Image (cartoon, rainbow, N blue to C red; front, top):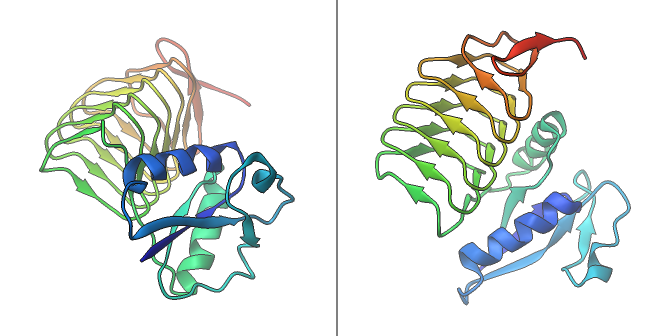
Length: 210
């Protein structure tokens, strides 16, 4: 029996509940046990399973599997590290409508929502999440703890490093590199390398000061 514990109890966590049900809800050996949250939550009052405990205080038991549903990448990494340090095991949630090439390489704790397309030899590393309708051409490489939002397009050989946020509707041309902890603003068209820890926006995307 796999008992899924979702880390987080916000709107994103409710989305991941729905994604998990789409992936595994018809399997008799799978159930969603509940959520972990360090903040007050009324998620159980909304008809979802209960908040079981805080992230720090929860101790995994036999049969537990985890998925992290925290949008903030720094908080995501912190909470994942806590659960990993306790021996917790993370699963992937891949919507049945996603089209995934057999040659795709995927880490752990990866989430992929509906209607995504991942072409030949794409790599998606640990704890990265793709919202719906993301399209990746051949040989795209996405690092760890990234967030890629809906309707984004990656041409062939794009390389995205760790801890990057790609907002909705972004277009990235072939061979571009997006360095660690960068943010690409909504609807941007990326034509050149994005430097570490910078935010870019526009068409063509240019650095902005937040």
